[in-house]
Amino acid sequence: MIIVVANSKGGVGKTTIAVHLAAWLIEQGYRVTFCDCDAQESSSHWIREAVPAAKLVRLSTTNDILNELPQLDKETDFVIADGPGSDAERARALLLRGDLAIVPCKASILEVRALAAATEVLRQAQNIRGGIPKAVIVLSMIGKNFRLTKDMKDAAAVLNLPLANGAMILRQVYADAPGQAAVVWQLGSRAGDAAAEVENLFREILPEAARTRLVRTNKKR
Image 1 (spheres, one colour):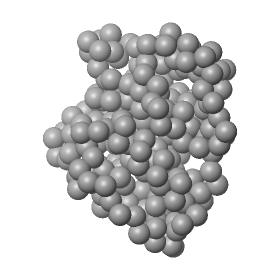
Image 2 (tube, rainbow, N blue to C red):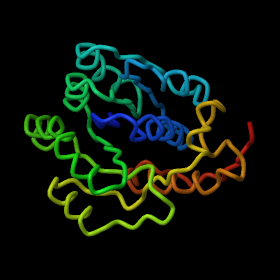
Image 3 (cartoon, one colour):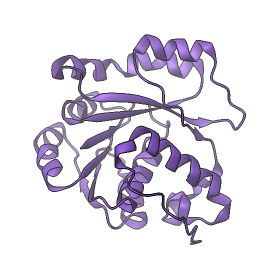
């Protein structure tokens, strides 16, 4: 299965979701290939140190994505592709090969409405492929007391994209994780809430992939 984490807007938590999803799938017992498709290569450094069991591949061009993803999919259980923030052609290539698109979005009505433009490439891919990739919006960087408004629900409904019940709260521990070469459940008790929300989110999006509920050691680094 090829899972693309994509939004043409940067700074919405794509890499955080992609790295943690790869780590979670590996802990469920799957073979995972992580594809860094962003020119900045920030996820490459993080995944190499935090999730060494993941096979890391960099796909820097549209042709690399179109030509290599199908073969990578045959060689592993899951391919997680961290999409570029501003390269529409690479994003289109990923969506033409992906099975599922996770679309992170900051939690404001303006951000949700902006998805109409950001998901144009997604719609093109779905039209070409008869509805594939499936897609889900994940609200990220939300306040602890955030409440989903009717306007935001309506805006998501207009896009005809499901909105995940789980979300990712704006927490300092997510920002600290790359510098600690870790994912949040390796950062001690202070990251317990983050670890729980990440696991619950992935179990919601990929219920068929959840093999066991792991006992987190919360090992400090």
